[in-house]
Amino acid sequence: MRSPLYVTRPMLPDLGHLDGLLKEIWASRIVTNGGPLHGRLESELTSYLGVPTAMLFNNGTIGLLAVLKLFDLPPGSEVITTPLTFAATAHAIHWNGLRPVFADVCPETLTIDPASVKKAITAKTSAILGVHVYGTVCDVEALQSIANEHGLKLIYDAAHAFGAEIDDCPVAMFGNASVFSFHATKLFNTLEGGLVATPNPDDREKLYYLRNFGIRNEDEVVEIGINGKMNEIQAAIGLLNLPQVEQERCRRRALREMYNDALDGLPGIRFQAPQSRVKQSEQYYPVVIDATIFGRSRDDIYEELKARNIFARKYFHPICTDYEPYRGFPIFSARVEPYVQKVKSQVLCLPFFGDVDKKDVEEISLVFRRPSAVRRVRAAS
Ligand code: T4K
Image (cartoon, rainbow, N blue to C red):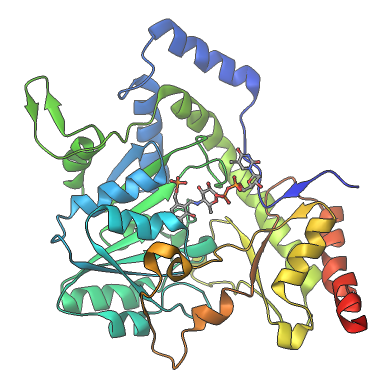
């Protein structure tokens, strides 16, 4: 049996280099609360991401909580989002005392569908929270025009979109704010971590307070803040990983090409359409498997890969409206049936990180290309 192949593996720095930074931390004994490495990383990421405001957080979820607080959305108001996302997106809305409202996704991009967003707008809507899911960016122009027309805040969950650009413009310059995740499973990671970016330099001050209990100084607390602080060891990992990120992105880009070639021409298999104006973050490699054409389902392929020690993932199945707390929440759609209800059983994210090699891709493609044991068993029964 081959060694396990996971959907992703974290990029890690050279241990010798980490040792140097750990010695700095040990010498200063400043281990958190905005230490020197935190300051360095925040400033490097501000330049890297090309935004006026870039504030580190201890994870993406707390970043989402803080960003929803940043805009003082009316309590109980509605935030329109996609159900095809990680739990954190919807939960952050709920934790803010707001109501998540779900809108369908575009069949081509699997990002939130602007026409469906329009169907979901009511007098109570205060914001749209789009997700650049798998690294595919949302239709930022259409969403902005809806937000402008209805006076809504436009926020992006950019957990999958680190370093993405649209027409050479950093992705975080679109909308009112974007939230990145630096979790171990992300292209750029700080083990756990996150960042809130906005195109507005004036947001810095409030985000600073929201991240640190609202503390202005020893005598004043000016916001209902939270503990969103990244510690010095996370920052050290980030400082060492940042210079490696473009190389990892290039390796993934090459891997994407390999997969595209290996799976090309298979009826019923669709992979992420390239977005001509976009520099892709290269976060995930999702394929959409239409069992009625392909002959085997997403779950068949998932199981066959698993039997070979290859661990693809069904992100994001179940979708948010399948979770117990959101069961019964409608999915607003410009279509007769929400497309997301169909595609949630069809998406599979294949192993996607720099160390996945040609042999791995060949092995995976063989599973797609040959009649499976599952299918033979089914046919025989
Ligand atoms: N918004 C979106 C759209 C998101 O996708 C996420 C996070 C967030 C917001 C929230 O951001 P954070 O608060 O997390 O910063 C993972 C991650 O835990 C989660 O961060 C991520 N999305 C989500 C898509 O994936 P799981 O349950 O799939 O993780 P897990 O532990 O099964 O890991 C997947 C594979 O990665 C493992 O099979 C092996 C590999 N792995 C994982 C870890 C943690 C490693 O090799 N090393 C590791 O340390 O959720």
